[in-house]
Image: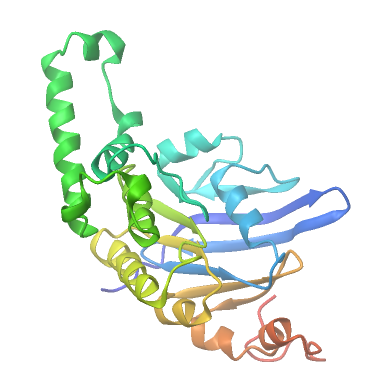
Length: 270
């Protein structure tokens, strides 16, 4: 599938400070429509801070976040979710006492219309909407290959399946972009391969761009269209995976060697 070159989500000169620590320093990125955009860097580089600014959980000291051409810097996380920015976290954000199907259905809660009385008296419009959401939840269950587990209590599921349910609930928001913080943390190689395939399918089949923080460099280089590298809160490289992999400053950041003397060397993008 050809990738769209349009920008859907943009960070413009974001800076964020915690006490004396600069978590982000004038960070700018552009996430293209139809792209998988990875954020990588050593621990403490500012990757999760950037995701939290994009999704509204942190308010930057300066700079702005632009979504579909509109400045959304003042919007709360819930408002950004309603606008189309879905977020998954490093930890699993599911309801452990509910089934997989019920968890995914909970993602449609914010889309319910009609109010409490309409739901209480089971107005026909409410019933139709519930049927529609149930059908869409089943489509997500089929997509994530959870058919055999739809009625299983999530708290009793293996870790990899719970991560799939968490992803399914995010998809129930019908997002325009999916923001994922270390989605493969704690997974086995087999579980990582399965989730990587779903992320690619989300981009290709649903045409939903993905922004993800991930530490597994093999996965990042295999599935990403664009990679941004952060170090000490600043962007040190940005480009296609092959270009970033060969960037001297990226090699230095990961291996602990000295940075190149010439910061304007080919392939280096500040």
